[in-house]
Amino acid sequence: MNRTEIENTLAAAEATMAEDGALDVKTLGFWRAVGAVKRDAAFVEEFADRIAVIDRRAFEQWALLTIPFMVGTVLAVLGTLGGLAVIASAYYVDDPLAALLLIAGTGVLMVALHGLGHVVVGRAAGMRFTHWFVGTIARPQPGVKVDYATYLRTPARDRARMHAAGAVVTKAVPFVMLGAAWGMGAPWWAWAALLLIGTGSIATDVLWSTKSSDWKKYAREMRYAA
Image 1 (spheres, helix red, strand yellow):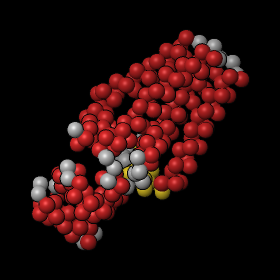
Image 2 (cartoon, helix red, strand yellow; image 1 turned 45 degrees about the horizontal axis):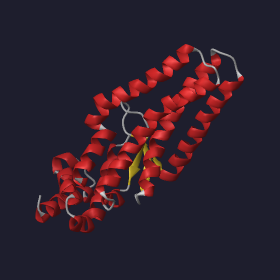
Image 3 (cartoon, helix red, strand yellow; image 1 turned 90 degrees about the vertical axis):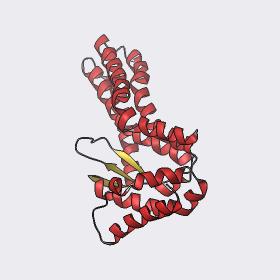
């Protein structure tokens, strides 16, 4: 796309927004325009703020549930602390309850730390975030929405790392919790459950996330970096 095509695409999206219409960014070619902007630093400075406004409106129309960023972050931190508390409590009860608490706490940590991983790495790179959200009923795991103007102004390699961060943290948690299983003398089936959760999570990423989620976005941004 050249500059005129980008301008026309954004103008069409803005006209739809002005009419309070449904913003079908795929049909409008919005993401093709975004891709062209990412390839040219001059385009980023010229169009980033307009793209962010359009992206925000499309997100608000798509997301099933949105929560302000600070509220969602506090909830995610509380969820993390709650997961750790559940795991800590497992040291003071007998099996099988102790093992079940370990597994439950691991699940809580995987959900809570996923979005926080994105936030920590993204904020370190200079990105801002606007919301936490649940996208659809079919994909109920909480996500975190980046402010697209700051996203575009961040180097592509750092954008890629931000996308990868949540997935890496999620995959690491079950294996780290093997240490907790050892410390509490958990039964063999608790170890097996943690290994199954960890390897299953990796398999899910290989089969799904590389095609439609975090790892797909990671690969996309690494192509821009190259």
